Amino acid sequence: PLQVTESRGVKVYNVSSGKTLPQWLSEKKKKALRKDEEYKSRIELIQDLEFDVASSRIRLSPDGKFIAATGVYPPQVKVYELSELSMKFERHMDCETVQFEILSDDYSKMVFLQSDRTVEFHAKF
Image 1: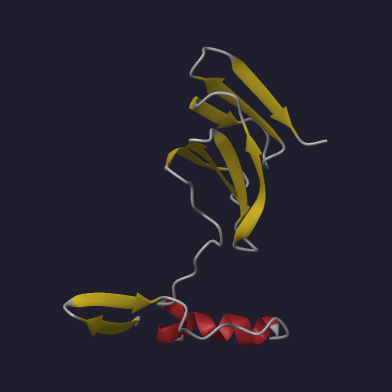
Image 2: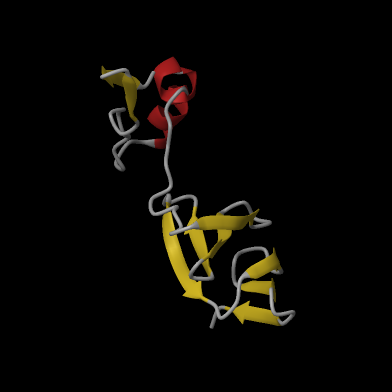
């Protein structure tokens, strides 16, 4: 469970107080943790998943390994790698994104419909 403290009637949740797994832990021990209730109830947060004003669209890549999110002011797209729980990259755009799709299995090809009615294709090179 989350650690909760209360100050002047305001609850503060400590989401980083849980135990983390060491990278050197064997696969056998990691599988054994599937039955551990404390391990199953943990919360993992994606680092830097924030936008200055708002995020308008979020998509999961078809392979399930990446999340792409578009934001406004400034217009941008950010891609996050779920296995690392961190941002892979971000790109700024000229206009707000109305809609977008991931065209490849991973994040390498995406298309964006912009508010000025243009279509932008982004590819990893």
